[in-house]
Image (cartoon, rainbow, N blue to C red; front, side, top):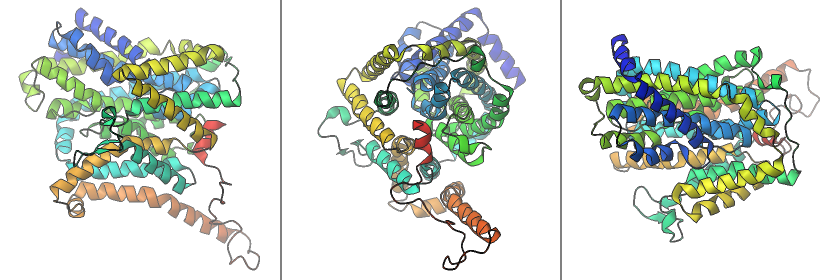
Length: 531
């Protein structure tokens, strides 16, 4: 491996490649900041610009755009609750709350540091374990992918707070919205109202912009114009406590992101949601998640960074894209006359290892570029909201329009802006709806493929796969576990409490009681978002 990396760094550290790597991460950051573009669109737009470059130089620049856009999308997610990509949606849950509390600087800084650390770990694993993970990923067929998607849907329970039924209903609503478009199995249009523009489904980037950016803006206007944040400079710096709390969250997010990133088609969005769900289960400060906890920022961002790098394992080794952006990059390989696959490492080692070495360089440049600018970015929150709000609206609508040059995208942003506003006013958690919207198409595709393999019989295929059974068992634990833990705690408290008055059945008052009708016990997530 050392010899291969030596060859790779020798190829990547030429002045020309360094220059275009820097240009790539810089452009990627700008693309990520602009709502609606995203890394896949940015890479696709700029492929023609690179046609005159050497293949390695071109791929280094495009990979830099990919990595830079991940952090750029997080900047707006934290500062103005406008996620530039679906994978940065989770960053709004706690990042925006930190920004509103005057801690935008630490949120941006820990995002950059956590992403860099996760990228380093993922890249080391990528260069050493690529063949092993590629073999494992190659063994994952539709049944295993279906089990993973089922596990992702069960994560909705984590985001539902105490009202699991409400969370499940919102997750189902997200799945129903994701079903707009052409049916995967039959090719029949669904809920398109004869609009050809809807055959491809509702684009979730536009939906995210509406739910978060416009929804939050309308909510702020309803509550009255907020006072611009006047944070002191020392409030924009990380503390030892921030770093102490972030280290385990970064480790967990990196592990989740890398494992899911190795799977073809899983992408980084599911990884960010799963990482947040893991924090809700295992973090020592899990009760603070949703109120501006730093773990809620660094864990999903670390998962996104690790997943985006791990996406290159199936892309390079198997010739199968790991996500939407690597699918575009796969097309770029073919444009340059390069065929990804098992023989690529043997036929073109300089190109492959030069590209992998550029990932280290690109992430280091990204850290050096954005970490010192975190307090500068945070100062955007000091702008008067009478100026900032129109900028958010214009940027959101123009960004949505630029995706497909269609007014339909603008109307989708407007409609879901009012949906997001209504959910905030009714104290409904947005996360289950978003998770259902993102996982719905992936789940449907895996379900159709598994059904086709089993000739309509799904359960025998799942039962015959060891990994699928293990993943489904984990999903069951995720669903049943919290209720079982609460039941055990209730019984324990009942035994330790003084003898109950007559007529209570020997149970401590209130033990085992669920939420009161009408929402007396408000949902955790929405209360934290709207406080």
